[in-house]
Image 1 (cartoon, rainbow, N blue to C red):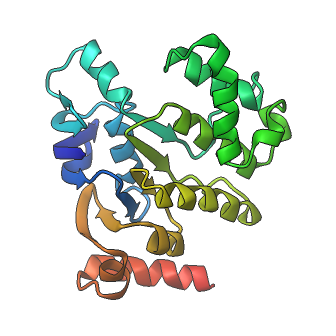
Image 2: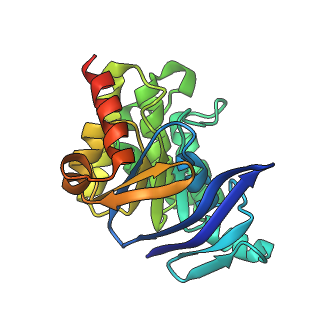
Length: 248
């Protein structure tokens, strides 16, 4: 359902993504792991043109975009195919929980006015936030704000939801409530690409693990293949380091 070919991204003289090739099947959950600076988040941001690569091609569903030459109409069509859940929630601070979701339905989906609020409440209920519809983001915990962000992403009805370290800004006691929502989405066969540092979560939720380093995909496979059976020295070194850190 998603195909990325020869994706390259540079910031100045620094190459962040170096010839990435990737496919993601419909309904598949792919977790991307790797050290800081490996290009994980940049890859996600390139998929919906928050960052513009120097070269490469991406297709999501029937939309195909060549980064070497595309127009505004093609860019808009590609962006409509995905929704992003950010590290820092990125909610509208001056809008209520409900308004954060209704805004997407109104502007992006062009839903009829009388259907917007009931539909937004359905999405909030799916993430356990219907009771907080009238509250503003400042009154919510980090975990609650992130759940609203997920509801907003779901409201776009995208082909794929992109998660950029969705728990990294949360207090430890709030992490599980967000991971639980993502796990429910996985059980519903929602196509997702998740950049995460939560190794146990990746092991239990993802269909496939991708290990990135230095702007390249070093290794990919099932959770068992990556976490238990990897023979690549870079993957092994990273996992030993992060697992030791988690135990500490």
